[in-house]
Amino acid sequence: MSGSRPEHLEQLTLDELAAGHEERRSVQPLRPMPSPHVPPPPRIPFEDQRLVRRLWVIALLCAAAAVAGMLSVNPLEQPLLGACIALLLGGTVSAVTTPLLLVEAHRRTPGHAELRRRRAVRRGLLLGLLLGGYALFRTFGLGGPTGLAVAALLVLAAEAALTRADVHSV
Image (cartoon, rainbow, N blue to C red; front, side, top):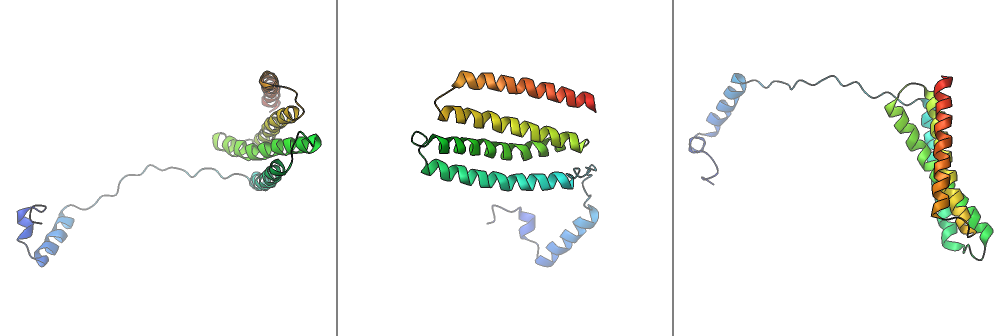
């Protein structure tokens, strides 16, 4: 124990230690660290908060129904139910990505709430339709990776055109 402390501290009594501690505190006052003023992040509008909550509930319901359907339906024997499950999968993807896109868009650009909301919903729906449609075609034995790539390029082109139209309309 004597090796871990300096020798001058071992010879002091508790009263001397307390007095020395108070003395050091009065000699060297603690200074608060300067903190830059960081404004709080802007709040998401109430309509967007409500939309995010509703979409999360829809996403949970779609995911539960899709998982239950995937575990109980053989799409080769019942292709119509397989198609419904593929569309539920697309709805789940859409309902999950839309709130994420909305919150991220609000974090990046706090203004233009209606435009942000419209873009996030449109992009989420396009992504859900893309993946749900691909799963639907694969259920019926159609399509492949090349078809998915072509569809993705078409979706990107459509989104770029619609975004450009939105920008020029504001």
